[in-house]
Image 1 (cartoon, rainbow, N blue to C red):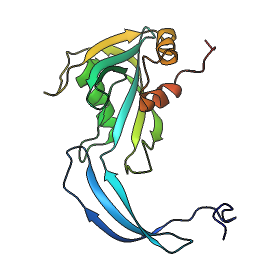
Image 2: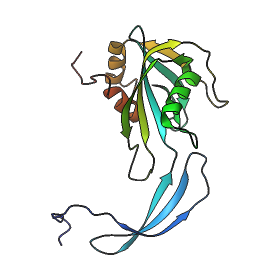
Image 3: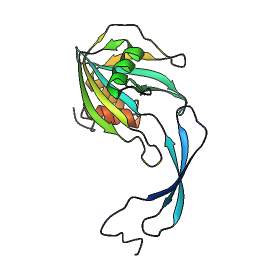
Image 4: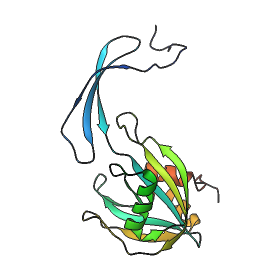
Length: 191
């Protein structure tokens, strides 16, 4: 079959022949899968980074403001503005992680929680999900309880200001944008 004209059946799953793991990279564990291309039957080796699931929390205060966090991010070597987020610990339910991360990073807790769904952070080479939660009527009830490697500033902003920050690039983390887009209309030129 001509590769420029895909099969009418569409892409098919690839058969896994072998898997081997590399050493842990703290947040990730590399895995090399040897797979068979379903059309050409040629073997290919592909890298997969095994990772725990993540959570993002869109927290809205009882006054209608969004709870944001600012922190230094090692990958981009910049201080970013995001929403509370974190890694699901082994054996922990992502709903519990969302509640824990909101409280630990910001000191806020919320009475109403709604699951917004999940996204695949990058299915090309990651095997995890990012679960997105809406926390409504968030109230500052505690102090921050940060991990030793965290330095987080907490701020609250109106939905209009958050939209402006998205539009001008001050908020540009793709996973944060997908969570915010499930709660706010982020299109340019809209209010």
